[in-house]
Amino acid sequence: MKLKRILHYAHDLIEQTLKEGDVAVDGTCGNGHDTVHLCRLVGSSGHVYGYDIQHQAIENTLERLNTHNLSDRATILQISHDEIKATIPEDDLARLKAAIFNLGYLPGSDKQVVTTPEVTIRSVKTLLYHLNKGGIIVVVVYHGHPGGGDEKDALLQYVQSLDQKTYSVLQYGFINQKNTPPFIIAIEKKQLGMQRL
Image (tube, rainbow, N blue to C red; front, side):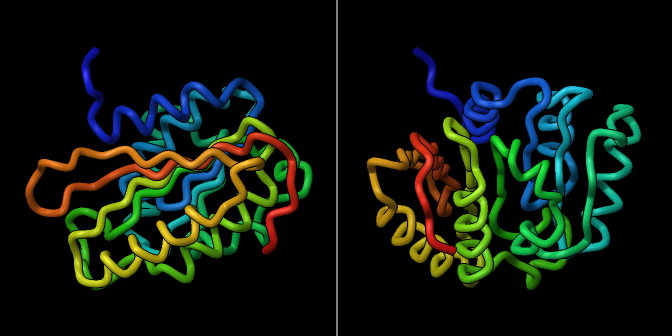
């Protein structure tokens, strides 16, 4: 067995979940790599909703989607990812099967613009409420920046409190690397339950 790197493992989890016709969310578009990957997985009859508050991230993502001829499979919004409920039509929410987040800041941009615990947890709660049975949320937690430790701790506390009858929660990461290495939190919805918003 070969241990998979963080991003490869995150993509593996998503690949095992999404199929043609599903709906997925990229909560942090960044440079568009995850958005493109999700678009390929949901196929021509599926759809991806991508969110980022930074204009540069939106531009990067739109350009990457255009390059790969996938623009028609995605709706890209320059707003916070906690606006999911207000921006995804009910019909698409009913097909929601996966979401991915890369917490922290946009590489090569203003490091003061970062994800925050309150907004991230609010987004995850909303997604869990609408997620189909067998669906998954994958959160790649980068926490080496100022405030990153607080977000990591708050998120871990929240996901550890989820009912094990309804959700399976996985933490995956390398513990002997320097400089606060990123890790994955993955939440699988095992059965339909009412996660409070």
